[in-house]
Image 1 (cartoon, rainbow, N blue to C red):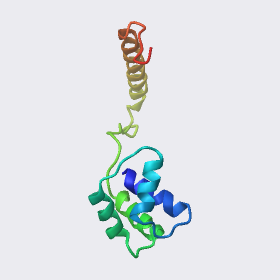
Image 2: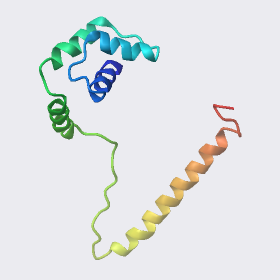
Image 3: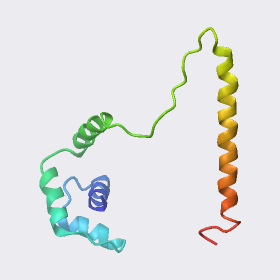
Length: 113
């Protein structure tokens, strides 16, 4: 990922086709190393291609990838839908209580204290 980020930084800086030395220079400036085989793979894959087209095609591919967790879907209210609202309110109250209990479990200590 850092090799791709360095490549994109070089392109953003005005270098339309960065070389391996350009990317190594960017990564070296922040003290990061890179594996030559990953660098060569990236450069061979993007050689002769427009970066904006690559990003656009990547977005299209990512659009079909499911992301996020499960989402609770509320049922459509029916004739007896009046009883659903208090049940939902109770569920929210229970969630808030659980969060409070979890915060008390750390006994006032933080990971960064």
